[in-house]
Image (cartoon, rainbow, N blue to C red; front, side, top):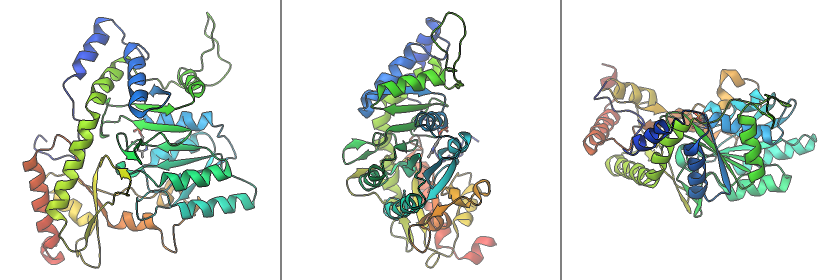
Length: 386
Ligand SMILES: *Cc1c(COP(=O)(O)O)cnc(C)c1O
């Protein structure tokens, strides 16, 4: 296992223990505590939002955001299709229906064309969605100006799923700060991690207060345990918040390191005919959480799965691009709005490969990946299956 090259392994800074020790010394072994409060303040300051609420996961943050926006039974929520299922599951937890929106080719994120079409149809039947979940895939910001413009025109609030794009910017502003709510994740494979955790950010501090209330079982102010509402157990633990504080200190370094990893792939593989790397929209800066490329089947004989299997045989972890949610068995029959006559997300799924992108990966390890990918892609199919 030790010489395995992972897709995106956790990378500790060395300072985590200091904050954890402090939690132990003061016996703050609880959800809530000084690390939680400090982590919220430090992250809000980093993102330049008025506040933040530290939670047990990014999924919990999306769930609370949609709950706060009043999403419930009979409602619909528009959601990016090309994403991890956690973007959409909370819609279903609340008894609402997801409507999936395709990607566009310049960011791989929500297509403004498809979104406009979905809105037009919804308006025609008098059933506007209750909220929109916009995802920033692999660190790349969606076309926020265009998308927010459309959502504002219809008066529907946005939840920005920035689970993968912490540290990225869009026109100089931090990713995750464009909607009514923004969501970050600190899962083990994300750019910074608390092993598991999430953050809800917003400029509406009243709503954040309400998020913290709902996240602690909606406990009313009283000496006894009193509840007038059904809440959740969604707060972050004070120990994990300590890990998060130390990780946040090195976030910008991690972004830089991820971008260097990406650049090395481009340098080492960019000349291969039919191989293209994920674009970066002008005016945006991606944290390059994962280095992703596509293989043109007309010009490259090897499929993404064959490449991934061949790398696996060398103990290297690579993955396909997210399978679009409108193609998932669990969402069969849900509405989907494509970008054009064809679905961009389906094409990206069919051709995309995520390469190992860990910030602790050595240059030698990355060179090994580059050499292997090059030799595999330039082999013929017959040779590969031998
Ligand atoms: C990781 C991720 C989430 C969920 O975050 P968790 O902390 O794992 O619950 C949500 N959306 C996207 C796009 C993600 O990549």
